[in-house]
Image (cartoon, rainbow, N blue to C red):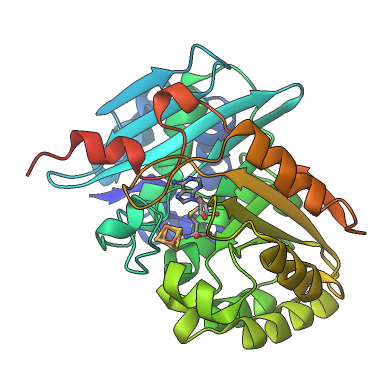
Length: 340
Ligand code: SAH
Ligand code: SF4
């Protein structure tokens, strides 16, 4: 049985037609499942009883029912650990900050890029399918009364290595026939996959791009993020400038503070030099301890790094660590549940 959540609007119209239904059923179904939070055909009262029964036999409407929800006592951030098949778990996060309600989603069940500081990078996983990405979002949407305003793909995995499923999922979430979250409210974070950025440039929706930089010194970055060996910071910068020119969009850079490793004076100078001619925003993320080789920065170290950056002409914002008590950083929670 095909999951209903794998279809873009026009695809669903076509599929319904092929299966003998009228095309306008697609609009009704999208409204029920994506606007009214009803994923049970028998309750779709504007569809004939006969069609409701038939639809239920053809399409699977199940969300991700097997999950654990952890709520942070500090800031009410919720972390979800979803089981998506017999072997694989993924994590997602739900955060409320004033009027902004953000969901952080995963794109893969692990990550093949093996960044040294990252829990997800310990194991390469598999790509999430279109419907798994959509169902991940929808399960959180159905389980929380707030209107979700923003989506970030900063959970497990490298979204740019799964563009074939990520982009259709984004189109479904963005569709004005359904959830209608604006493309400008959707951010995709990458470790800097140049081929993927080229593809994003061609993608018609104006989604936002975030790049996990973590060092603007090539040799150092290669050690922290091996992907940089084949996607070096110079080529990366070139493609980011193209992206900016074509999309006319400000790029966000993310930089984890790893004390004693990437927060010295020479690191800040290299960072300043790298970013000086790009219209960008810089998010500083205090490292959240996941692996033994690194330690978390102290408040003093965070402040000192921020002060070193203060001459920056671009906006520099410090991202607060959310849900620290429930293992806020990506891939951490899953690690605790995997036994074999
Ligand atoms: N693969 C993509 C998206 C997922 S990782 C990427 O790397 O951008 C999302 C973010 O979490 C990245 O910016 C990464 O640098 C950060 N991150 C990973 N492990 C972390 C940790 N232990 N503490 C803080 N941030 C972490
Ligand atoms: Fe993969 Fe991103 Fe983790 Fe690096 S930081 S291992 S790219 S998920």
